[in-house]
Image (tube, rainbow, N blue to C red; front, side):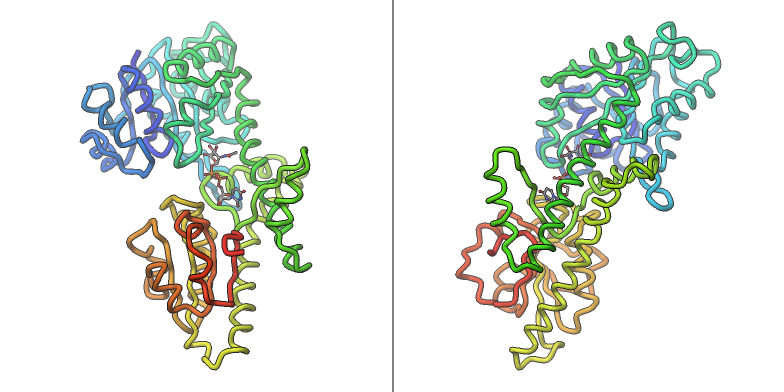
Length: 417
Ligand code: SAJ
């Protein structure tokens, strides 16, 4: 079996490597020539624990190679991004381009799997693009089980930072366009999967992926809303949640500076875009979570004002230290990070110096250079008048509370309570 993975990013590359590690011939395809070169050298262009070793072994063993042009294969897995277009609408251009790029090399008997997070109906749409490009072949939407090409939707559900473990251990939802499509897709994933393949149709599988991330978003929104209410009522929200969670049927998540990353803050909008009338709770949860960084910035402004009333310093002499930039703890990923958004707003607003502590990076991102300064945790604690805790990195949690002499603190993660 030859497997071709289209899109060698955070999902495609680990998946390609997982198949190759089971001694399958894998050809990864990406439009990014530099990523292709890097992979062919046995190296990786993304940060993910353990991925480097698996890719290196797969390339050296001759099981994995990358290319910028599509090739004929027995199975295709499409793992390209589905970003927004306009106001929170899913943009299917990359899926469309991927489908159209494999269409000319598609041979009778091939299996095509879509893994990208997609709106409901995307797999049928992809099948239509393929059918339009290849009138000489038959597809499941035309002839059902007699089709020359099998098509399925099988969403990824791995947690960044634990991809190589979750890819193999997690159960997998398999949404074939027909039962045979599902059976073939299950057989393919069973090459490396230790979790179970759970079979359904493509529309349910598409909705399932969106549902999982919306569930998490709604639950985080509940925690974030509680944090606003508790601040107003002078109640410690972390203690409150700890107590409420002692109830056998209550399990509240943790509030924070907002919701970041490329999935939880995006996928719920795909549901809202398709069902704006019905998806009221899902939309509101998104709005609650997106509002949280603005609320934190207001808290910072109020805390700085408070600090000024008790200090003999002028505003331009005050130093503010922001702890953490990443979108969640113990990673270096700054994209779509509420901590970045808050730090940027604070640094632009504040007349004095803004210090940044982020143990996982060595250099500030471009948007923060010139308006803030990357310093060590010790420097920030020694110099700053106001502390803002944004990400509960292990280094910050390990800090001895006696090192903190500041009285003016905004703690969005309850680390320094
Ligand atoms: N967060 C909170 N409070 C919490 C938990 C998380 O504020 O109690 C915040 C994080 O700080 C972060 C954001 O939510 O800013 C998202 O982080 P996350 O760890 O919940 O999720 P992601 O984005 O890293 O990965 C999610 C996972 N989905 C679910 O857990 C349902 C992962 O399994 C998916 O594969 C991934 O999205 C994806 O690719 O869709």
